[in-house]
Length: 306
Image 1 (spheres, rainbow, N blue to C red):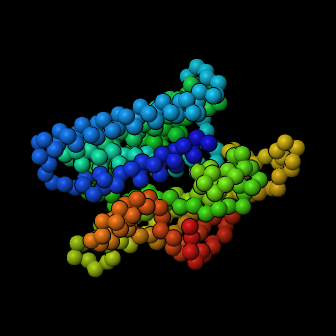
Image 2 (cartoon, rainbow, N blue to C red; image 1 turned 120 degrees about the vertical axis):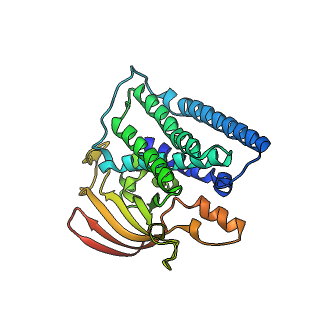
C-alpha cells in the first residue's frame, strides 16, 4: 500500500510540473519577476508540503498503531519492485524541483541542488512516519532508493544540463490481482498503483544526446532497458491460502526487457497543447516491441509491450 502512495505522488507531481517545464530554460528574469517567482515557488512548495504531510498523517498513519522509532528491512519483498518505485519517484520529484527553481530565476547550480534535494526531503519524511508506525518501520532500502533517484537527476543536470537518461513507468493488467484484491487492488486504478506484477520500470536512454550534434539520428528515439517481476501474490512469498480459501501455485520470477522508446519532449511542434501533453505523459514508457529475458530461462518477443 505504501508504494501506491509513492506512485501516486509520482503521477501528481509530474503532472504539476507543466508550467515549470515550459519556462525553466528562461535565460533572464527581471529582478521584480525573480522575487515574485521565488515567492510563488516558496509559498507553493511550503503549502503543498504542509498539506500533504498533514493529510498523509490523518488519512493514513493516524489509524494505525504507533510505536517507538524503529527500522525495518523489507529488501526481500516484492522482488525489489517497490524499490524501483521509490527510485523513480525520487527522480521525478527532484526533476520537478529543479524545474521549479530554474523557473524562479535561481542560479543554475543552486537551483539544481536545492530543487534536486527537495523531493528527497519529502520522501524522507514519509520514511520517518513509517519509522514510528508499528506496522512498518524506517526502511534503509527505501531510503537508499530515494537517494539514488535524487542523485541521478542531480548528476545529469550538473554534467549535461539535461536528462539524457530518464526513468519511466508502464503498466499492463496481470492475472494475479484477482487472487489478492486486498493486496493488489480490485479495480484498474488500484491495480495500477498496487499490483507489482503489472508494473515495469524503465531506464530510457536518448541516443542522440551522446552523438555529434550534426548526427542525423532521430532526436526523439530512445533505447530502453526494463525490469519487472511476476507470479507474486505476497511480499516475501506467496500464501497457499487466504481465509481458508486455497490459492493456486505461482512461480515468482524476474523479467528483463530491451525495447525502444520515444522522448516526446524532443519532438518539434509549435502547438502549446501538444507540448503540454508531451510534458505531462513524459514519465510513461511509449508502447513498443520488446524482447523479454526472464529468470525462467525463457526469451519472449512482445510485438507491443505496455
